[in-house]
Amino acid sequence: MDRGIFITFEGIEGSGKTTQAKLITERLKNEGFKAIYTYEPGDTKVGSLIRNILLDPSVQINSTCELLLYFADRVQHIEEKIKSYLMDGFTVICDRFTDSTVAYQGYGRGLSLQLILKLNETLLGSFKPDLTVLLDLPAAEGLKRNEKINKKDRFELENLAFHERVRQGYLEIAKFDPKRFIVVDATKDFDEINEEIYRHILWVLKK
Image (cartoon, rainbow, N blue to C red; front, top):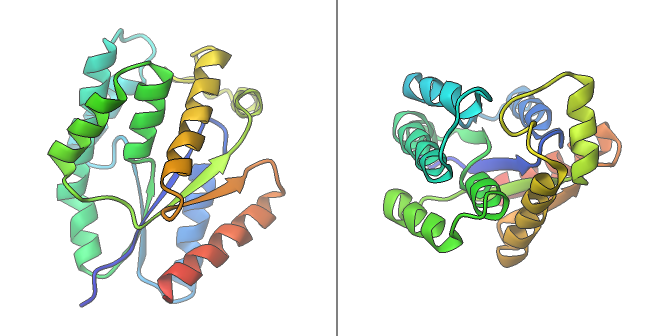
C-alpha cells in the first residue's frame, strides 16, 4: 500500500485553521478518501497531559521547558498515531506541527532558531509534512475573533506584539520553503477559503 499524504494546517490564533482542517477532512472522507484529523499538542494520552500544562495560563513555564514539552508531545504523536495512519494510506490532516514551534517559541518567544531546528532534526530526522496550509491573518484581527468566543489560554493572553512576531515568523518560514507551503488569505470569505484549500489538496492527492 502506498504511503499516505501528511498535510499540516498552521496559523496564528483566530485564523480559522482548526475549523478549516476539520471541514477539509470531512470533505475528503465524503469524496471517498481515507482521511483523519489530528492535532498538536494533545492528541495522545501522554499528549493530553502535556497539553494541560502547556495551555494553562496559571502555570508558569520557562520558555526552554515549553519548547521541550512541545517536542515531547510531537515525538509521541508521530510514533503513536501519525506514522501508523500514513503507513495505512491515510491522508493525515494535522492541526499544528513543527512550524508552530518555530513560529511561537522561535519568533514569538525569541528562542534560538538554530536550537529549534537542531532539535527537530535530531528528534524527527527527515520526517516533515508533504504540504502545509498557512492561513494568514493580521494578528489584531485574530485576537479580536477569539475575544468573541471568549477563548483564553496561555497564548491568547500574550500581547499583540508577540502575535505579530508569530505571524511574521510564519511568513518567513513559508518564504524559505515555498514548495511545501500554500499561503491562504484568511480575511477572505470562509467558503472561498475552504474551496481554495480543498482544490489545492485534491491536486496534491491526484499527482
